[in-house]
Image (cartoon, rainbow, N blue to C red; front, side):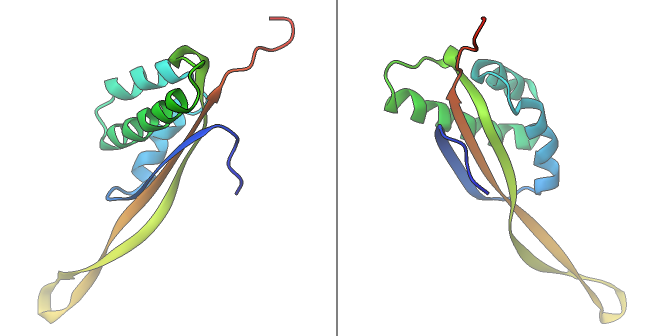
Length: 121
C-alpha cells in the first residue's frame, strides 16, 4: 500500500488491539490537524492517547521541515492502524489443560499534509 505525500510519523509494537484503535481512528481521518487533536484529547479510550501522540509527532515533523506551514493549514491525509505481531501466552485451565491467549499489538501510521485551496474557493 502506497502512502500519500506529506509528513509521516509511525509508532510500532503498541500493546493494544487494532480492533480497539480503529474506531477511534475513523473519527479523525480526513479532519483538520487542530480539530483532530481536540477530538482525541477529549476521548477516554487508550487508543486515542496513542493516536494523539503519533499525530502530534507527524505535525511536529511537518512544522520543523517546512517553516512556512502552520497548524491550521494541516489535515490528516492518512491514518492507518495495522496489525503487529502477537504474543502467545498460556492460560491455565482445569484438569491440567491450557488455553492460548493472544496479546495483540498495533502499528499506527499518520500522514499529515497541507490543505490545498480548491478552484472557486
